[in-house]
Amino acid sequence: MERSILGGYSARFCLTVALFGATLSPARADNIPAYTVTDLGTGRTQVSADAAGNGIVISPDGQRKYAFPNTPNYLTDQSVLSLLPPLAAAPVNSSWTYGNPANAYSRISGGFLNQNGLYVGTNFVGINGHISAANSLLVASQRQADGSFGPFTTLWTSPYNYDYDPSRMATAKFLNNQNQVLGTGTGSEGNPPYVMNYLYDYNSHTLTNLRDLLPGWIQATIGELGLDDQGRMLLQAEDDRTHLMHSLLLTPAGVTSDPITVPEPTSLATLLLGLGYLAFRRGRRHEEASGEESSVDRLS
Image (tube, rainbow, N blue to C red):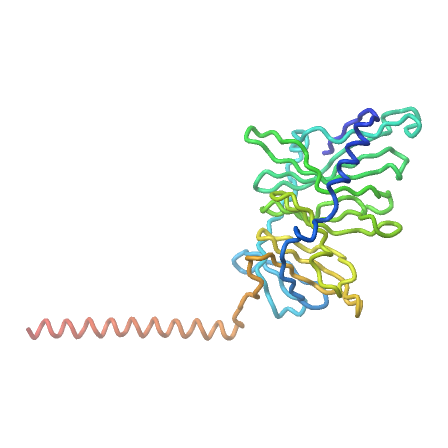
């Protein structure tokens, strides 16, 4: 299901885009959150679950495991789209739409919806046949007590949406249950502009460029592998010195970044046998003590 609208080209659209641009610069240095960066090694890290169903991250060498309680919040109920507020105005201009306003579009499809009722998705705006006019806005809307959704908040935009390169769209990759969004867009650097990686905290309305959180030897963030419900991020990035791909676990302040201690199978079996033996000995001692008390009672 897809939601779309048509609208008249006006100063309103231009002003809207200008306002979006004014609020989309990455977080200032004094707003950059504190993270512990753990290099898990070269290669790709696995996002998995333990025997109890708890989310974990397994390092590329398979030797370390870290807590990673993540919730897949992909939108499954497409009827939610019909409840969203009005989309951005479509840029209808007769000289670009060949005299047919229907060639202009503003639409939204799919997205994320978390347990707090926060919806996040991409609003695509443009004119058919004019890739230079294409624009995308990553937007969020909070479900209200009556089931409706409040006004859109623009998290970031990406004005370079060439049809042959969808990676340049303003896109959310993950939404956690702390109302944090991890995704991509384009910045102002490079020709064509580089794809940038962003973290948006909806609660504090803070946009952070992930480059500001990574060590200096990282050349560029290549991909996002996960965002858990405690704010940990799992990224894959290239080492500028060796050009090898590293998996990085970014842990926010106040959240443990220590690996999980998991006993080896043989050690676990030995531990269970030891606990069983202790329980057996405790039971025997209890029986012996009860027998001695009975003997004393008979003698008295």
